[in-house]
Image (tube, rainbow, N blue to C red):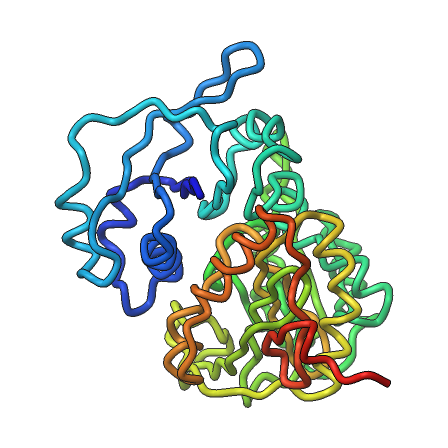
Length: 346
């Protein structure tokens, strides 16, 4: 199988720690599977009429050798890679995303397995994707607006509890996410000026305001493959911080999904499939969906360490099955995959 990883910069991947990098684990799994593996960046992609090609570097290092050896063995000269000759293109790009690049990648849809589909990633890069789930009661009460008066009214009249969440629509790793008091916080208007922009600007930004839930025990990150959970971990915020993001100092702990969490995942799964989100990260808290991570979902190395598994192999096996047209496996009661032949008859 021919597989390529689309990155922001190859050098940034080379600087990552294998112990915590989901992308490096996926590359290692591709090499272990004997697949022809390439790395490329968006700036190296070109469209010529109906063609889509890019300058790429082939990874030839031993799969179980340290990643530093892979990168030291990379060829000095990039090769021209016809993207239509790929079996799978894995998009590992951080937000904000390049809509022009994603527009060019749309031509591959249906002919190359895209992990994930560009349109699905674009829909979910903005945190407003949570609105339909809030309307269905699957996510906390949520407002997206740039009207200061409406935001203040919503906080005062429509929310419950002492706190609320304020965050920008686009961001990653908990950047800019604030937990504020609903009353007596004299910084609110100044913060809205900062996030939305002042009236003197020609344009302003929307923000997301959300009902705050009890996060003292942390949230749950679930990795969902083909609409089915394959692993999860609980993320507990650092002392003095409300954010459960690992990059913000949160710690990770083993977690077994309960039936209410599995029900929530089942409710969201059809949308994940419809948007072509082959691999997604769901953040859950208090029986509610907080966010769907589609750009570059992480967590594989940490869940591996907690559960003694190799989820990167699970993902690559699913990629191979999909390319070969083999039906996906079924989830077991704890969210792990099992073969359809293992299902007991009713």
